[in-house]
Length: 340
Image 1 (tube, rainbow, N blue to C red):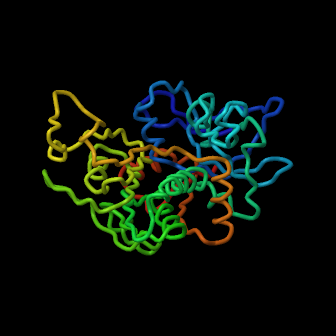
Image 2: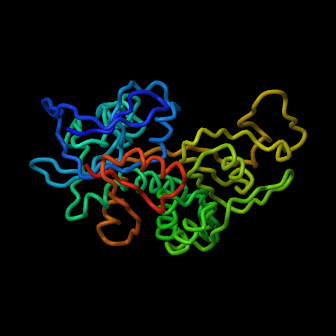
Image 3: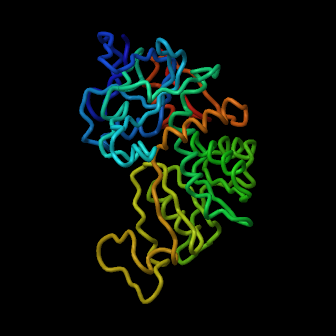
């Protein structure tokens, strides 16, 4: 089979021929129809997760064909099935989970081996090339919004930082599931326009909050970048007793702006990330990762019903490196997917 393989950190993916994988007892061989490219792929390539064993086939947004089932979406957190998290339908929190493109070879290839049929969701007529981004972009945004709903009691405001694929899904979920005013922040005029088309009430460029300034705009802030700048921005926008949900994994930390620290709490040397007086009073800071199998089924239901809109551009597997470069340059409106 052909596969896009990361052989060493910082290097381009190598498009190479490999033997077709063989499914063992209980496993399923999925013929990949499409595999979405995510910003976390770039983070892996850049060496942000050095524990990943190389060489590795990347790709965790996978749609394909499985014998006996048909066209499927692959749920990407392969939990052990026996721990307390898995038994509560929270496979993405399973400490023993394996994940395609991370701990096991993923979908940027012609075939991928999935540990069990329980990680496959039938597409029921949905085009697999369009469906692939639902496995992460659609799912992760849904989980984040679902977790933020308790803070969005009307009248309320939700801020979405980053209007890429995940942010675009988040705008739609917020308008479907809450009565909140949705404000999108993104530097790209193209993505801002798309956010407005998808239902955002306002869209603005990435603002700089001056030292000493707090805007306390939102009951809930969803950060789909997760950089130092955006996390600091989020802390400057979230109201007291609100919630800041970090979804993007851009390596940021929530070091507060010194001017936002409430007296008498002065910062000492070093970086302080959380503490009484260092963030808005009674604000909740949380991360949101992946989503449950049940969440994914709900996302698919919304997609199959026609209630969701998302942009997909198919790229041949041989063009994986150029696709990665386009994503790095920000030249993507929605989601790029590799098609073997």
